[in-house]
Structures are given as structure tokens and as C-alpha cells.
Length: 511
Image (cartoon, rainbow, N blue to C red; front, side, top):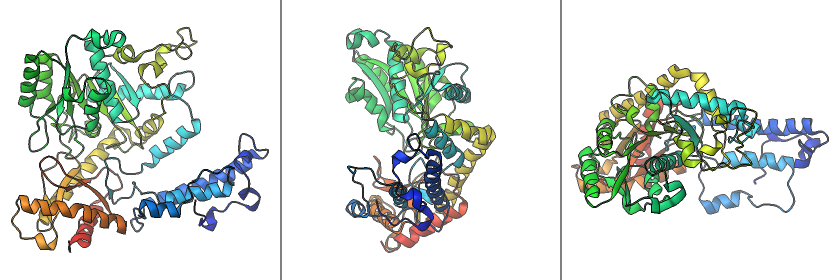
């Protein structure tokens, strides 16, 4: 990559031109060389952390892809480069990386840089172990057991089973597979012929796309993932769910799975769990709650109800600590009310890994519960973060984020000439339009909304080019483009919210 690394990251003369073979485990002076090399990398990381928390620093130094290719040397060499060049590469990589932990990065559901969780990720990378057996990950397997039990208790269950998965999409897939296995246990061996009819699943039209993906991946067909209409606030309409289940039963199909979303990606909406659970019980359907986004509010006495009321009635729950809770990416969990179902569904009993005559209790060999073989250690960073915060700290964290979102709504209402609040949020998703000078005082109607929608991508482009702010935008079924501001970083303060609104006005007033 670029060679403009500052002197503070220059290795000593006797180390700079050495190669990877001079590091542990092969180098004759491996300890000293490895220490100096890694210390320089840590220095680079510390600079990035400092800059991430400096409000005077840009969030990003934006370049178009063709420009970025010219700034970086990304080619794979025939012969390895020096240790100094590797240090330079590390520095250049972070120089052009978006600072997602910056207090004025409001762009994604996963924001912030929790240093305790980050320390956990550093240790995890150093340990470099797989999570399929107790044999090679004893401490981490026990940590996973303790934390997953604690999360199930927060849901409201006694017993059950859980696993960490590579993202909420895969967690939702595990729920689908378990539901099908529970209702049609012969499917695992016999396949489609074991089901005498067409399976049908139901989810709201505001759900995450991964739910529909389950239908495609698992052979149901996306035509049989039925999108249930939602109300103007983005929440599933229970009466429509009841109607659609009855309709498909009348056709001879087999309704078996209902997904309710607790915290939709765009609007942050919560489907009415208790009403949906009543319908699922009546029709003997599996109820899955996708709380990948909203699950963190289970830890808040103030905000848990009514949003998550009834979640304990679900058969499975997806909950991503790497979102609202601020654990480092990635950290996604899937929880089941019934113990034993996960392993019954996915077990393949590979004899080279999961022998039954081992020295220890083989229930701690978790690898046969999942469709993966190799599984990354995502537990230590969460365990360490939870140790640091405790339940009390996480509750304060959730309340702080929700309070900041309420503050933002208040400021938008106070500046209604410049901003249009689309709806009162249930979560930290604040949806709004920015109103430039030429559209102030104009009657709000569909024509005005179209104009406001055109402004979003232009204003977002200005944000990225100046590097001072990042807020996401998108359309939905009812509206053209609008801004969706996310406050999920513990670094954000009320002053950052004030800056956000003032900077949008500075960048966009002439549009």
C-alpha cells in the first residue's frame, strides 16, 4: 500500500527489512522481533481509536473506487514484503476506513466502538480456536453456556437451548430449520416426500429480507413466504395474519411458521407479539421473533414493555448483541424454548469430531448443533463486555440510547420548518425529511414528499464528501427516500444530536 507512514510507525533499522519468517514461530530472534512488530500495529490501532473518538476528526476520507485503487497498492506479490511494509499497509488501511465508532456516525444499526468488547476480540484472535468442541475451547464453551442461559432468562424462559451464529440471517435460518424439524421430524432423512402438502410461512411486509431468504434456501419457494400487511407504523396487522392463514388452509396448504419482528430495520417497529402468539397457538404454528435489532430492550425495565410484551410465548428468538448492545461485529444469537431440538435437527455425528467415548461430558461439544463445522469464537467479547457493564450497565445503556432518540424527536419538532418527522419512533430509528429553504412553507403533500425524497441522496453525498456526518436514507412502500437516523453508539451525546441537525441544515439549505 501507500508508503507515507509517519515516523512514529517506523520500525528500528535492524527489524524494518526483516520478513515474516523472522517472527514467531520460525525466527531465531522471534520474541524481540514479534514484540516490536506487534507494538507498532497496536500503536496504529490506538491512533485509530483516538481519532474515532475525536469529534474534530472526519468520519471518512471519501474517494471513489477508481481513485482509491490509485491510492493503494493492493496487489499480491510473488515474494513477501518487509515487516515495515506490512506496518505501512496497516496504517494505510485504517487511514481510509470509515470510523463507524465516531460519535457522528448514525448510518447503520451497528455503530460505536466498545473498548472492552474490542479487547475481547483481540484476545479471541490471539487464542485462534474453533468453537465446535470442549476439547479445544473449554473456557469459551463454558462462557457461551453461561451467557446464553442468561439471555434466555431475560427472554423469560427456564431451560431451552441457544447458539451463537454468524449473523441474524443465519439465526433466522436456524429457527426455520428447527420449526420444520419439530413439525415434520422425518424431513431430515426423507426430504420433501415426508410432507404431504405445501408448507407456508408468514411474516410482515416490513420484515428483514433474510426471512424470505429462508423460503428460497430451504426449498419452500419465495411464493410461499407470505407477506402480511402492516399498519402505517410498520407493525404486522394480526387480523390480516389470521385471514391469510385461513386462506391458505382453505387451499389445502400447511401453515407452519410465523415470524414476528421486534425492531424492524427501517422504522424500528415492533409487531404485536401477544396477538400474534394467540393466532399461532390457535393454528399450531411455530412463532419466531426476529429481535435481532430490538432484543437489547429486553434489558430495560422502562422500555421492554409494551414493545416486547409476550416474547416469552415464542418458540425461538433471534437477538444480536452486536446491534443495540454495542458488542463488536459479529455477535448474533438464536434461542429456543425447547432443549434438544437444535441438536436433533442438525446433528450429523461426524466420528472424527464428535466421538461418544471422550474423557469429558460430551454435551459441551456444541459443534453438532449447527450446520457449520468451523465456528468463530463470538462469545468472549460479549462475556467480557457483560462482565464490565453488568445487567445494570446494559439497562442504563439502553435507556440512554432511547432517551437520546426522544431528544432528537423533540428537537425535530422544535425545528419543524427545517425537518419533517415521519412518525413517532418506537425505537432509536428516527425517520424524517430534511426541508431545504425552497420547500419551507410549502404545503406538505405527495408532490412535496417526492421533492424531499430527491434531496436525500444529494445531501448524503455531501455528508460523505465533507466527512463530518453519516446518516442513512432509503424509501419504503409508502414513501420516497427519507432519512433514517440510528443512535446505537454509547459515544453519542445530546450535543452530537444538535450538531447532526445543524450540519444537515448547513450542507443542504441550498438544495
